[in-house]
Image (cartoon, rainbow, N blue to C red; front, side, top):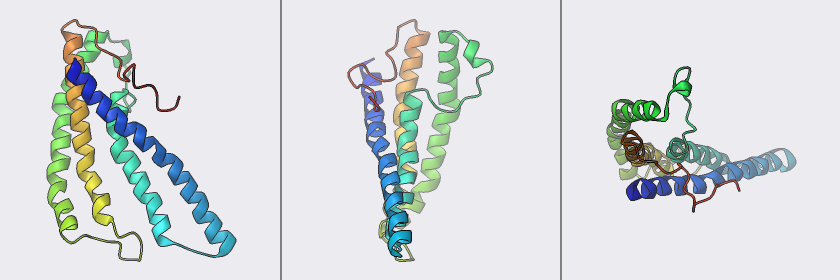
Length: 178
């Protein structure tokens, strides 16, 4: 159970950090609008930074969403399942769907990201010179999801074994919005 807590604490920590990206996006968007329409100044790098933050928020926050069990689910039947049956569905979904998907995304993206890093790829239109960093998120997403998937396997395995598993958000971690 200690490993499950540590893994979940890690992905929740990344999620808490990424929550600030949403605020930064709003502030940057206001700045872009004020500069553009108030002063007639356009800045491609500033506009691209909003896109970078949006990509980072989504890619780095996905594991946090999984940790809190807030991902999209069509739960017509699931909502009526017992905790043990839910744990079985989650365990099988993690093993048969999530982990293979993470492996596929990582495998298909690895060379693509490596080529970007090899050339230190930059924006062609005068924007941010960090396209290679943005593309690295393609590897961060499956890596973080895999970490949380392991935590979910432990959590659901404990539930199936009859142990009372801890809440997704650790007691000592607190909520990102409180």
